[in-house]
Length: 416
Length: 163
Image 1 (cartoon, helix red, strand yellow):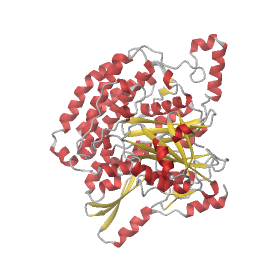
Image 2: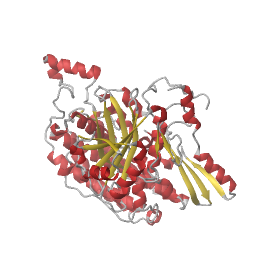
Image 3: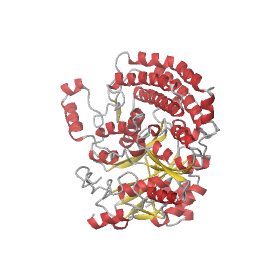
Image 4: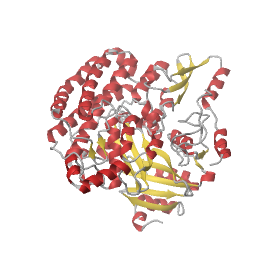
């Protein structure tokens, strides 16, 4: 690539934020408000340019990219296993889910999906659902805090702390777990873990009742959420919105049901839907999802067999410590995987998973070497955030906060 | 090259009947269907798939760089039909490095907007008739396109001192 064509691509850039500012200057009544990137209710570094006429939002322009860390580029410089810790950092409220979708995509390419032990599959489901509860707790706490209900935050973070403690027990990390890996799990769960998980989940249904007691009949909460943030279903689909927002518009689309992975077809759970298609409906859907997730966790806890926690395929997983010290072949495999990484057959795979925010999918391309050729992360927050302008334009500025909260985006997930 | 097995898939058959020369290759691997589409016809093909074949959702658009091979860029369209549950389709357009340009499909799916901007930003593929083709991830004054294979992972030339 020569210098001249590098310059030519940047010369064609036009900046729309400035255009918004110019057009607003011409109309005396209009004011441009720069919301973020450090505004607390944007939950991260989102900047939204709002053009206001009094209290009404005339135009909204989300400006993203402040948290862009080039994760997809870094993936290409690492081996297949080394990518796992990066996937945690994409959506830091759904780290287990991100580990899972990456592991599933790589396993698809390796053609080992069928051989996965039952214990691994169930453990993955269990963790993914705990993660969903965790993510929804953070969402509910902060969303309610934005709207003015402060108490909910403390209740939600109490349960979130319990889940993080479970994650810490199992992986040594509260948030950046890297626990689900291509080929199985990182370690076997420690002694007493299942007991702790059971204790937590048995008490959890009551906790959801507590959240609902705080909000369900609260007149301020109802007024701030009902009928707010409505966008027609057609528009939502056109803009690429996924997850609870689509289900709150009446479509029972859930990847766990439609394209089951990791044995989800064996669990008994319902897909929560509402038809109101507003902030309140999204709140109801997510509350229901927490209960359904608790149901799945219980089923997984009841049926989980005792190991093995990894595939026994030498080209994919590291051999056990005992084997490595007694068998020469095992030592060679260990050396090969650690020094150059496993080789993944050339090809491409697209794996979608239902994250707490919607469809998270990895499109993984391999050229047959020990490094990924391309890892594309189709993240739900990126798709969902795009619908912000149609959702808030023409409405009151206070509703913008409620609408944004109901999208439940994570900026790490948007910018990657 | 399209194998007979791929030709018999209803979507491919319908596509071939309507646009005889649009599909240049088709592969069914790992139970995933991927079609290579002539870049000049991508807009019509997408409109046909959305309106007449039930591919309601555009999941994402992205790129893959095969540098130093030519044509180096693949623009990948990930489509999904919600009515048929697990029905997903991948379209690919191959573009030459010296003129990486393709028609924007924002008129069909408005949600293509950010995905096309991202592909432009990170790969330098230009989308004709895009309403606002600006950088989305990188700073506006950034030089180069980071996801190209000839862009270094470390040691790029950007200076933070001017800000």
